[in-house]
Image 1 (cartoon, one colour):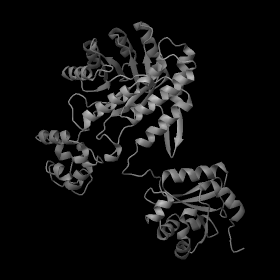
Image 2 (tube, rainbow, N blue to C red):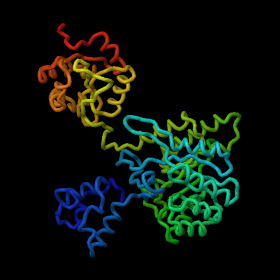
Image 3 (cartoon, one colour):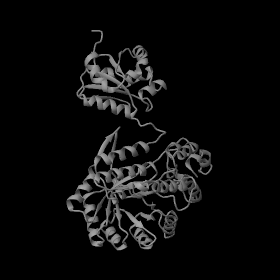
Image 4 (cartoon, rainbow, N blue to C red):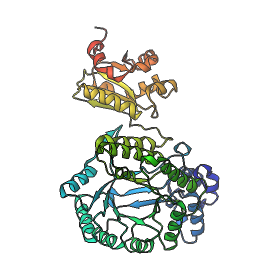
Length: 471
C-alpha cells in the first residue's frame, strides 16, 4: 500500500496496544502516527518482537515496507543504501536515500590514471548549506577479459579506497576472482543477465552480495530475471533496464519512469527494486572533443537523478560535470516536511570583541550560510544571532509570524548577547524592516535596518554602523 494512503488507525489496530512506552512514545497511537510518516522503526516496539507476535509483525511490515526495497552495498561507515523509497513524487511524501554516484575504473588503465580516479572518489567534497557533498562508490570494470587482471584491479581498488565497490563483468569466473579479492566488502555484482543468471546468482549467495539484474531495453526479460533471482533465494537485487546515449534519451525516460511507476503505483511484483543508470554510455559515441562526451554524460546523469535511478556509474571526473549532479540530488532528496535548518545560536565570526556588530538572521540553512559566506568573505569580526524561524527565510518568516519581535527579544535573552558585547545595537535584515520598532521596544536594543541582501553587509557596516548610533 502506498505510504500516502496509510492511516495511524490501520497501524494501531495491529499493534499490541499495551501503551508500554518502551518505544519512547506516550502511547501506541502516538507510535502508530510516527510509523506512518516513517519517523519510527517497527523494531522499536518491543512487545511486537515477543514470541507469538510474528503474524502481527509480518502484517505491519507488509503495510510499512517501502515499495522499492532498500539494498545495502558496502560495509561500515561508507556503506550506501540504494532505494528504500515509498512514493513516485517527492511532494507526495519524501525521498529517503540519495542516488549513489560511482566513478568507474578499468583493469586496463595505467596505474597513474587508476589512482587518480580513485583519489577523485575519495577526495571529492563540497560544502553546501551545511552539507558535505561527496561521491559514493567506485565501479571496477573488466575490459581486459582476463579474470586474473580483473582480480588484481579489484585488489588494488580495495587498497586505495573504503568506498563501496561495483564489480562489473559478465564473466562468472572473473566475477568469482573479483569477489575473492573484495571478500568482506559486500560489493554490488554487475550483472546477472539471461545468459549467466544462474552462475551470478550462486556467486551472490555464496559471497552474500547484492546483484544487478540486467536486460537493456527489455523490461519483460528484466522482470523475468528478477523473478528468477528471487526464486533462487536472492532478495538484494538492483535493476538495470539499460541506458542509451543522448540521441535515444526518450528510451531512458521511458524505462526509468515505467519501472518506478509499476513498482509504486501498480505494486508490480518483481519490480520493486532500486534502479541503476549508466550515464557513462555517452562515451561510446565518438565525438570530436571528449568535453562533448562529458557534457552529454552530465545530461544523462541529471536525467537519472531526476527520474528515479538509485545509483549511477559515470566516467567523467571534471568538477564542472560532477558538481551539478551532487547539487541536484541534494536539492531533490531533502524532506519537504522539514525545512533545511541550522540550530539557533549566537555565532561568532572572525575575532569579535565586545564592541563588534551583532547581525540578525533566521535559521533557514540557505539564508544562514549565504550570510555567513558574505561575512567570512569580507573578513568581518562580528556576531550573527540566529533566530529559530522554523527553517523559514527572513521574508517568509516575518510574513508567517515565525520570526517576530518577541522571538528576537527571546533569542537575545536566551543566548545572552548582552554578555558578549558592551553596546546594545542590533542590525536586522532589510526584509525584516517592519519589525524594527517592535524589536527595539521589547528588547531595549537600538535597531538598525541593514541591507536587503547580505552581500551589502560589509558596505553597510563600513558606512552606517557604529556601536553607539546616538554619537
